[in-house]
Image (cartoon, rainbow, N blue to C red):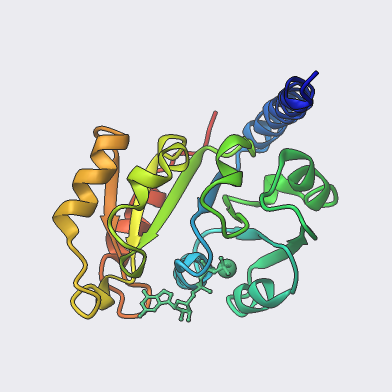
Length: 221
Ligand SMILES: Nc1nc2c(ncn2[C@@H]2O[C@H](COP(=O)(O)OP(=O)(O)OP(=O)(O)O)[C@@H](O)[C@H]2O)c(=O)[nH]1
Ligand SMILES: [Mg+2]
């Protein structure tokens, strides 16, 4: 007999368990009145750079914190801590995504009620994170101009499970002959009516609209 059905069975059990934990997390976040925003993208699309700028801008008048996932290194947490926000690195070893249990462990000693927004940067990967609910309110998928306009068509699941798409590194668009119309069309093909922002965290282009979309996130209650 083929081993395939057994693998599928175990995978389904893992996802079910994750969904259960994510529901519990969402309930805890709701009770603590903290909004949770997760970022997913392929490696190097600019998640940490966008978050560095976001934390720097928001840290003055909102209580913000971040969790950041990577297979190895504390590099991203170190970068994000420069904003003064509370930041914890989750190192996943060989695992290519965060899951709800990793989030629960990371925040086990945090006073969630003291926070307004908790950001979660997922491991850089366009495939694995898609299936794992982290209890977030808003999932943001990033697509860098340098990656090619066809990524939404090639990796539809991650775009389908996101609420907002952010096209990053817009300052490099001309240099890499980025076809914005095609990128927008491809995103809308996969996820019709999805909100799409164009941002450069380096030059500040589009940052105002991005911050505004976060400030429209109301506390639950
Ligand atoms: N020109 C330009 N470069 C950018 C921009 N955003 C990020 N970068 C550069 O892109 C590279 C990767 O950025 P990161 O923010 O580390 O990307 P990441 O998605 O967090 O990467 P991983 O965590 O490894 O998946 C760095 O060299 C950044 O300086 C941007 O808006 N414009
Ligand atoms: Mg990063």
